[in-house]
Structures are given as structure tokens and as C-alpha cells.
Image (cartoon, rainbow, N blue to C red; front, top):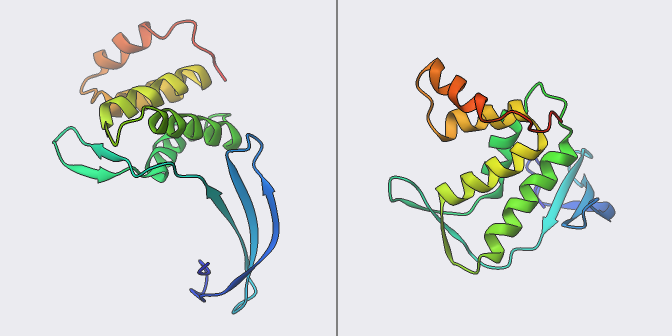
Length: 153
């Protein structure tokens, strides 16, 4: 595993353990070059999945894009990293268990929205504002009025 600090090609595993939801293996590593320590996660990938974007282009499924979007939506909210990881793992599992080799970005967005709706109402609205391309304040107001009663974290 390449060191993220010095790009040395060799690192040694110091500790391995499953994540809380058993969806991945967390490994603590130490670089053989600079001695820095870092963490990696090993996850099962059932099949190659292609995401069909709204413009018709195709990309390989990338879990980190979902993680980044969810983290951004949850920024400055009291949503811990473990909840975000469980949400992203749940979306990834849903995508993989569809049994399809291609899935639309719209379907993935709906899965993320459903997960966020149950985690944090503000993060849910933030994600929806980008995903549904809100262009005016009234779009926020209309959508927020449908969110009453959603979990606040």
C-alpha cells in the first residue's frame, strides 16, 4: 500500500479489525519509508457497476463520491462519521444487490436522500437542494414544508 505522505510503496499492517457494522476491515499501517501511520479500509466489491449520469455519460461506481456528498451535506451537523459510513455502506449494498450492472445516478441519489432523511433533516434538505437543483428560495421553502417530522439526528 502506497504511503499517502511520502508515496513510498511499502507499508506494514500494525493492526486489523472489522468496522462496527462488519462491512469492512480497518487496517492501521506504518510506512517503511517515513514511519508515518495511516488507516486503510478493505471492502468487498461484488461486481463492477456502471453509473449512468443524467447527461447519458457512464462512469464506474465510486463509493467515495457518495461519501463526499453525504459528508458535505452533514458538515457542521451533529452527525458522527460512523453514521455517515453506515449510510454510505447501506447505499452501496442497495446498489450491489439490485443485480444490475448499470444503475442511474438518479436512483443512487434517491437512495442517499432516503438515508439522509432518517439521519438528519438539515443534511437531507442540503443534499436535496443540490440533487434536485433548487434555484430559488421558494424551492427550499416548498421542500422543507414536506420534511416536517423527520428525525433531527
